[in-house]
Length: 376
Figure 1 (cartoon, rainbow, N blue to C red):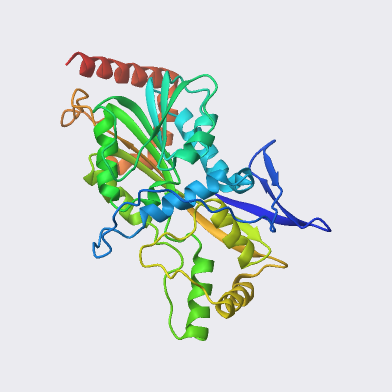
Figure 2: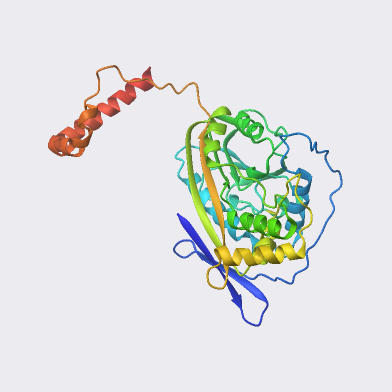
């Protein structure tokens, strides 16, 4: 599924609005004050980063500062459009789980993008966590569910007991974690047996237009290039990571959301407002003005459509279950099959020929077999 957002500039106001159609009766139109000053804050207690460690791709302290600044921005709701949409889609997947869920965790909840949309889920208690205390303060809580807010660093052991949760959700958060396998193992640890993990994260094709434009501009103006867009996980690696960390019955799918902007500069402004600007350890901290202007021109020339430019966000959705040893899968006895594989192309015809009595008998046999397996 592809989602298209349009950027609409209002004449004479200096504001930019985003419009989207994401379903019947759902739309977003938000003002975008381009002239609003950025508000910088300082958070004491910087954690040591070992830049020589190959595992540390991201500067977690920088990401904390970015989230704190974004949370304290009075215009923060303007930049929520992407995470709101993905959070709504992830919450819709939670509603598809036909299982009793008592206690859950929203890991990296941000401003409550998923939590406020799961009011129909029969959860008794929801833990909401984030790396940023200020972001956690602004998070919206679900109306009908008791909730507790706690600060959790995804790269450290969670302050939760083992096998204490039925559900763990994470919305557009795990792509900033250095030790992703360690984080997934922690999630598996706190889940009960037969617990479920649902997450969304940015995929490898996210912002490919911005990435290529900046590379070409730097090569042309400075004779070399640096990484200005943080690396993202490839979809082919997700399944292996989840399996290695103890999850089974995996479901992984990909979505693309395309957002339109007047130019490269509005895109970068919005990324800062979302706290999704670059936080790589080896990032280049300064971009020359000439390079930025060249990148904007290249972006428009290569990808421009009409008066604006598109930005692609690839979203990877994943579902994994923690196995329950009590749930035994008993294979059927050899020779018990009623349909040969060579006759699969005739399956519809065989069902039709069997008539209603045949269908009833088939369903009854299946129910008897399920009851037999449960007793065993």
